[in-house]
Amino acid sequence: MKSVFRWIGLLVLATWAALAAAQVGAAGAVPGGGGGGGATASADYKLGPGDQIRVQVYQNPDLTVETRVSEQGTINYPLVGSIELGGNTIGDAERKIATALRNGNFLRQPQVNIVLLQVRGNQVSVLGQVQKPGRFPLETTNTHVSDLLAAAGGVTPMGDDTLIVTGTRGGQPFRKVIDIPGLFLNSRGQDDILVQGGDTIFVNKAPVYYIYGEAQRPGPYRIERGMTVQQAVAQGGGPTPRGSLNRLRLTRVGPDGRQVETDARLSDPVLPNDVIFVRESLF
Image (cartoon, rainbow, N blue to C red; front, side, top):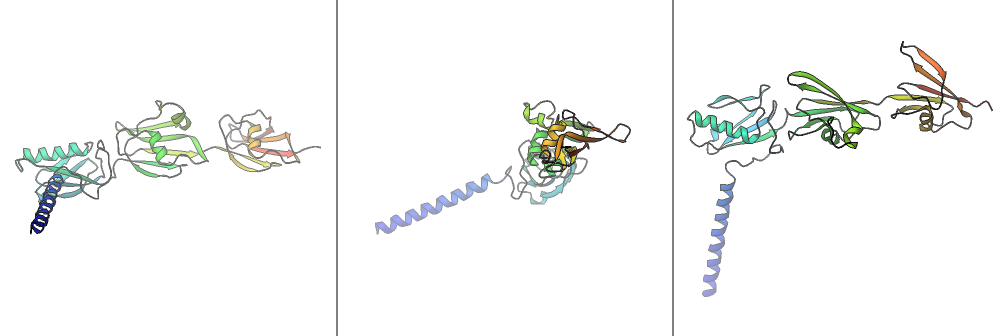
C-alpha cells in the first residue's frame, strides 16, 4: 500500500509542476513579446514607408490591426486615428501608440506589441556588375556602402573599380562616386558612407580594350589601372610565333570623335575602347 500511495503522490506532484510551468510560460508570452511569422530586424531598426506591421494590444483583440506604413510614415489606428511611426524604432512605436490610447482615455494601462511582418521601406538597390543584384533591407541605422556591396556578393570580374551611390539627402538629389578598392584597402574611410532607404548603388561595366591580329587570345579585355600596351598584349597571351611586339598599331578615338591610328609603343597607356593590332613580323 505504501508503494501505491508513493506513486500516486509522485503523479500528483508531476501534474502540479506541469501546470505551474504552463502558467509561467503563458504569463511570459503576453505583452511585449514578439509575434510569430515576423520579419527579422534588429532593435534599432526604424520603421519606414512600405513596412507591413501587426499592432496588438494585450487583452484587447479588437485593437489588433495589420497595416502598412504610408509614404508619409503614418498609420491609421482604431480610436486614435492617424499616428506617425516612420523613423521610430519598434519599441518607440509601441510606446507612442500606448501613450495615444492612454491620453485619449481609451485604456488605462495599454500594453502594445508591434510585429514587423514585412520590410519594404528601408531598402537599398544594388545593381549592375555585382554577383547578386537586388534589393536589400536596411536592418540597422549604421549600414555602410561596403556592407551592401558584400551582401551583393562583391563585384563581377567585368565590374568597374568605382561605384555610384544615388538617392536623396535632406530632400535634395544625392550622387557620389566611390572607389571600390579604397573601401577595403583603407580602414573604412570617409568614402564608406552610410546608406539610406531608397538609395541605389550601381557598379558599371569596366572599360575595355580590344586586341586582334597575331595575338594568342584576341578579343576584348578589362582595362586595369595604369595598364600599358605591353601589359595589354600580355593579357591577350602575347604575340603568336608570327607576330611581333615591335609592330603594334593602336587605333584610338580622338577628342573630336575621329579614329586615329598610330604606331604603339610598349610603354603607352591603354585607354577605354583602344584597339591594338599585332602585326606579323617582317622576318
